[in-house]
Amino acid sequence: MTRDTESQAILEAAKADGRMAPKPYDAVLLASFGGPEGQEDVIPFLRNVTHGRGIPDERLEEVATHYRANGGISPINAQNRALKAALEAELERRGIDLPVLWGNRNWAPYIKDVLQEAYDAGHRRILTLTTSVYSSYSSCRQYREDLGMALMETGLDGKLELDKVRQYFDHPGFVEPFVEGLAESLRKVREQLAERGEADAPIEVLFATHSIPTGDAEASGPRGVDFEGGSAYVAQHLANAQAIMDRVPEAKDLPWQLVYQSRSGAPHIPWLEPDINDALAELPARGIKGTVIVPLGFISDHMEVIWDLDTEALATCAELGLAADRTPTPGIHDTFVTGLVDLICERTEANNIADRPAVTKLGPWYDVCPAGCCVNRRGEKPTIAGKDSTVGAG
Image 1 (tube, rainbow, N blue to C red):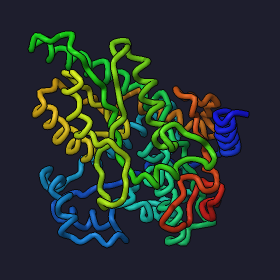
Image 2: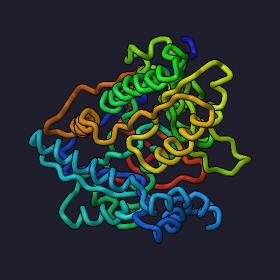
Image 3: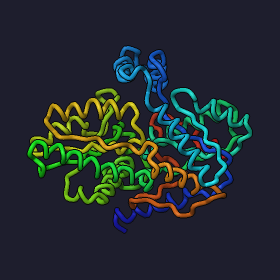
Image 4: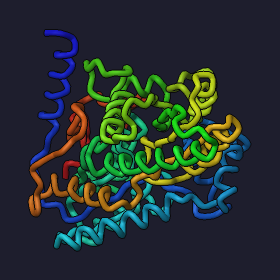
């Protein structure tokens, strides 16, 4: 057996072992990161995000300027409210009676409070849908930990059953809006180049996602799998990017690369690279005249999209003389919302959808994570939806 064959066998075994039978859930929890709702909330919010890292307020204030420039309000909250409403409308359209709750990890409404309210309202079996779609500590396991800790802190472990849908990085509902967006952005960049008399000039596509520590990246996904790029987190992005390029005729033969943004760690700790601005700086020397930035790591236009991409990266493009456009995130695109409800129906007894589509060979991902998946290198905590979970089973 070759190493590739062995890796694929391990992944397929994890996917098969981690698939759960449908259940009669009585509510859906939309779980997200959260964000400040005003200037007074900014520093307390950032303290929540960086809790336990010993970061002084003066350093937090450097990041706070991004929020303060937006009135101290994170756009993620309005986006989550809009997504919640869109999910409710799609569920109602299909005749599915499942209330949609909304809770955040780092700001009100806090997950812990929402779970207590749900229990008090009579809910006993909840299916969680998170707004992070890839496999890593911060985008999967940390959500599972926070949900597990919330059950422990409220005393609801053993009383409230809590599961989550699979990581849906390569579900068509998430991918197809990017396909549509890339085609439109390429058209816009070609128009910009045509105005300069360079209609056929070279264009490169940059797929942008959140950088994470390389140690966290290497710990992502099931153990023993030789993922492209050294981790499930990187491999999932690379596979998605290729799938998107393959689906856009206008992108045929165009160069592309995966780049990173929003690094926030100490300088001596290695994080995934290259930074998007560094990657942009290298394009002119290779004769590239235009670029499309695809925010592949994000479901909505929250602060790290509108600041790191729309503000900083596009400013870099202007300085370099690059024609540029940033594609939309899925947001509340009809295809995305429909796909999310399909993911819910994969797990429900009523209105069950047995088919589990995926646009890459990595998927469909598992419902229950194998032991040690996206391991917490900072110390283990109670988690839900994992083979090594100790809470959440009801």
